[in-house]
Length: 334
Image: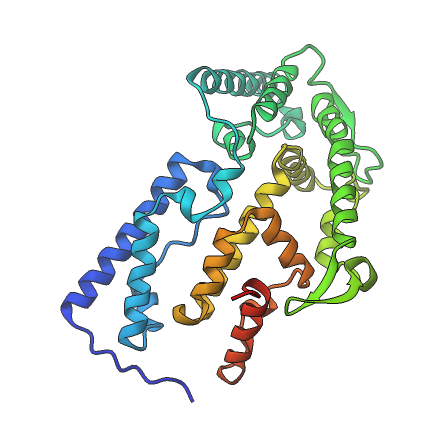
């Protein structure tokens, strides 16, 4: 039986919730503008109307206010691990260098498009400073991307070549093809090493070792797909597919790509627990996960199957069983 609302809403309750939501959303907007590298990690903006639907009791209300206020007031570095994967602190000179490289890159695309409109669709997409600052996590990344942008300015970089094996006679610039093929070996080496690491992990069940490795029981479709060798081109690749693949190659060739993914996974997992469990039941688990470094969190998550299964309880009847499972996994010594 569903729980009946027993909260009597006062005018001050509505005002307090609206203010908390306003501050919560304002913090997200500020972070989106000031720290584009946090894209994909920040929570969704909230609506007072939607949140009220989930508030059944005064305790629910107080937990929600605390959650919204906590996020709005805390330093983001203490809320999410994503920023800790970033080793670059941008100097004015580096900001200017990137902005200049992007401007010159785009100017050449404009010149080529005006001179030969028929080749416009085969040219690379225009770059943005925001796009590059989202993916650059180290000075090594910055050096690589500046060199890449500058290389497009060389004579002949704009020459059109074939996408290997294309059924549709797909064309792209010599620069874009070279960039894709040049980055793939490193990407695939990292994928292979990561797959070997995961396959060697011993599978656990509620924190207890089973004697089997992930390689013995199978990695799972998602991991198999994400860690399979990447190809630059496929026979049925369309122009849209090519643009999507190029963006992914740019992202995955960055030094901290996998570390950033682990940070996103950790923050998403914590958020899922908060949304599906009562604060008093899950606080210890969340505290333990927040205190873990990314490597320990990711290894524990993968040993337990690499799934969000325990993060969603199926019904109230099994709720406590799932809480105990989570405690066994994340706080075994408490």
